[in-house]
Amino acid sequence: MYFPKFIRKKMGGMFLSQLLMVLFIYSSMAQGIIPKPMNVIEGIGEFNLNAGIPILAKSQDSRKSAELFNDFLEKRHGFRLFITQIPQSGPHIILTSVRGDNPEGYLLDIHFDKIEIKGGEAGIFYGLQSTLQLIEVKDGGLTIPAMRIEDKPEFDYRGLMLDVARHYFPVDQIKKIIDLMAHYKLNRLHWHLTEDQGWRLEIKKYPKLTEISAWRDSTIIGKQYDRELLIYDGKPHGGFYTQDEAREIVRYAAERQIIVIPEIELPGHSSAVLAAYPELGSFPLVNGVPQAGTISGTNEKGEPLDNDLSISVPGFWGVQYNIFGPTDAAFTFLEDVLTEVMDIFPSKYIHIGGDEVPKDHWKTSEIAQKVIKKEKLKDEHELQSYFIRRIEKFLNKNGRNLIGWDEILEGGLAPNATVMSWRGEDGGIAAAKMGHDVIMSPNTHMYFDHYYAEDQTTEPLAIHGFLPLEKVYGYSPRPTALSIEEQKFILGVQGNLWTEYISTNNKLEYFIFPRMLALSEVAWTPGNKKDYGEFSKKRLPKRLAELEKSNVFFRIPEAEVTISRDMATGRHRISIESLVDKSQVYYTVDSYKADPTGMLYTSPFLAPVTRKEHGPLTLRYIIVTPQGRISNEFSQTIK
Ligand code: ACM
Image (tube, rainbow, N blue to C red; front, side, top):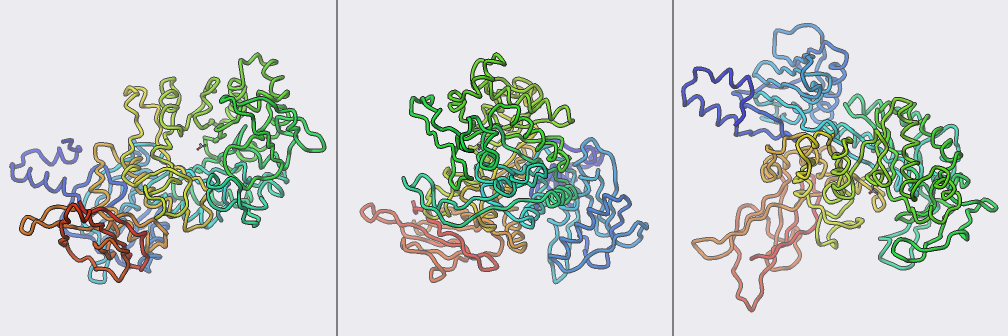
């Protein structure tokens, strides 16, 4: 077992019994912080938190973090603390700026008469977030148990990607998600601002992007591939963020230690742009319409090419064929757009997409073929690489770095690019082996738009997949295929929320939560300290109850169900532990529907063992949260 320095110091000259005591305290971890801190030592007693407690904060940044602490306290408990720069003799909270080896690390010391948080700017902010999660309501007052926490993140990049292009979400909703990211110590919002189905950022030089590209006439209903003929809702959808709004999001996030990384998709996923500026595409125009007639041939599978070069903003999903041409006009446009983007977003990284470019269509494009010849490129993959390299050069010249999805490896990686690995881990592994930085967001574990349950009929419509909470939690962002040296190129991990089938705030929250809490621990907590059982049963319940109080429409997870054999009766013994604090469970074992007419679970109960000819019984149950939300109905065969 590793002992931090302050424990090792304390251990000198101890009797064995005292040492065992320290070991016991060290490992009991009764508190419920997510993400789990690196080291915790529980103390004796508690700090009483009330409106008379001052916060001593000397630096400007720590005062800002104290204000945000107060905002949370006020929302949840109805009071704010007085922030001061004058030393205090009575019980108080003190924020001390120190330069540690990790600017996000912090030391949180809670005594009965004082709470001290030491760290850099981000560290103090995170120490305050941990403190908020430790508050207990006791006898009408608020207490915080005494302990010492030494904490720092495992990964520097802890991200969430929000696709606001398939569906637009209002500024307040983005801020709500930012608040929650910060509370769980995520620090990168990857803002997916452009897509085939909509452009969401005001660009002053190209007003048609917000007049035309930001809007679509109609959107398909239901899952695209369920029907041959699509059904449309007939409702216009769209919207965009003004530059002022985008700057406000950047500012709001920065106060909460989050960097916003904008994504401008190129050269694919660009139909919305081309609906407004069709001259930037890969095919010549006649009367403003790209000449689909010039396309012939087959794709790599030998199937005839789809030559629907849509000239309106599409209201259906999938990879679209109308993509930027590798022309001077397109590069001028993109550089102009990126110039405005860089002015709004101070982020060192700019994400340029690069995924799902239908290169078959470049094969049939005279414009593209001309560039391949002129630049002596081997094929369309190298053309994509040429495209990305040219954009990278522009970004680097302006002091920024490029991130792209893993397809940017095809045809040769741009010299300084960071790769975001989404088609599993292969792209990330290849890039790290080449000495490039990598962010892991594999669609096997980090696609939050996938179904939560195997039985899709119990869930709201999702794109596909099956991603239970435990699978998110179990992800390790350092592939074992990489050596220790190569693993150093893994900057971190990100969850992605695509929104083809997500059009409401509630649904957005449902798909993110509680997955984001599992992600937070994947990103922050050292792998050897992670334990799903302890996370889900000991710490998650409190946090979910807290999310409900913050009006977050999280998915109510399945309970932990244990079915064992009762020795005395020979029957099945069933226990059902909800993962939401103070919730109620109603169940049936007769295989019929569970609702509040069923049995209210209070303690483990017995169920009959059926004969073979009866077949097994099914346990069905629902969970009702403290505020009355009802879960999906869950079921499990009693075996
Ligand atoms: C992606 O999911 N196309 C990055």
